[in-house]
Image (tube, rainbow over all chains, first blue to last red; front, side, top):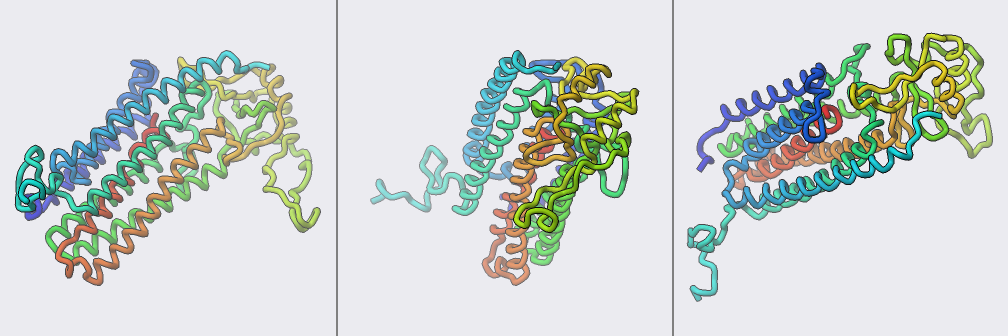
Amino acid sequence: MSHTQSHTALIWKVFAFLSLVTIVEVILGISKPDFLYLTKVLGTSILNWIFLILTVVKAYGIAWYFMHLKDEKTWLRRAIVWPIVFFICYLAFFVLYEGGALGDILNEWTRWTY
Amino acid sequence: MEATIADSQNKGTWTGGGNKPFDASYGKMMMWFFIMSDALTFSGFLGAYGLMRFKFLDSWPIADEVFTHIPFIHGNYPMYYVAFMTFVLIFSSVTMVLAVDAGKHMKQNKVVLYMFLTIIGGAIFLGSQAWEWKTFIKGSYGAVALNDGKIVQFVDETGHQITLESFKSSAPSERIQQTRSNGIWFQSEAALPSVSLQQVMEGFANHPELSLRTELINLDTKEKTIVSREEANKLLSKATHVVEGANLKENEYGKTLFADFFFFITGFHGFHVLSGILINIIIFFNVIVGTYQRRGHYEMVEKVGLYWHFVDLVWVFVFTFFYLI
């Protein structure tokens, strides 16, 4: 069991990692290199994909080490993570798809000149 | 009997029907279930934001142009302040997990110290968020709303946005704000914009180098469209009023929906931070008076820690969707 030994060193390592990821995000967010910002892959820019992936990595770090899911029983962990991941992917797919469709319909009726 | 009643001594696996397959206390399980439902609530909110964003993909405000302020410093600094807020929240998460760790070793004094730092971190975050709201509500440049609700902003010859104050004419203000002391005694109105529409129109006519920027985004360059001078005059003939700052009804940066979602989602998250701080304070005093030392374990600190980390986790996503993407 992990109850006897201290995790302090690991905690600081995770903190350093999360800080690093945040700094990378901020640098990319401010500089917005054109080849990442303006190149579109799978519906959005490469930069947005990088942000999304880094966000999920950060979420993993927080949930696994700070919320110590890592030390929980396998099936408690799965009972928590699987439904969340499944429902959010489901929701995100339909909601964003519908949003895009609404936009396409609406654009035909939006006037930008007077 | 043995066939029908679960045996608490049975250390069997999941398939063997162990009595506590998850090896977690009731309280911890319920905290996790609450966190799951709350996570789905936030997903719903952020999903709604995503839907509206995709719906208005060609005219959504650009976050880097909205959140550009740092306290006490003038100028254009996107991202820095919100990065600082993110850091504060991650650091308070670290002190929280250190408190949980110290609790496992029954080190009361260390738990007290780390809980205290966590509360301070939360308070700094909440204060920063209040400042962010204040700045957003106050606005930076000012804009003009057209009769169909669209927003136009003013730019100089280099295409940079300028304040209404910098080019307005000196025409006398159209009227003064109606308060209960100077009009009908039971009627009053919100503060008038600092610049009147007439001053903006005259100022624009006096400065032929100025032009207008519409909400429309050029999807190839991802920049807002700057229109020609004659088109600008045509647009301005449809102007209805001056908009300064953002609120739930109008937003000088563009789509009002952006402001609505910003206030609602960061507000809901801020409310979570606030309740997290209050719960942390309660647990903090319990630790000081030795409740958990007597109880023999610090599981309560662990449970409130789970909630606190969840608040941090949500902020990670809010940060991404409102400021980065």
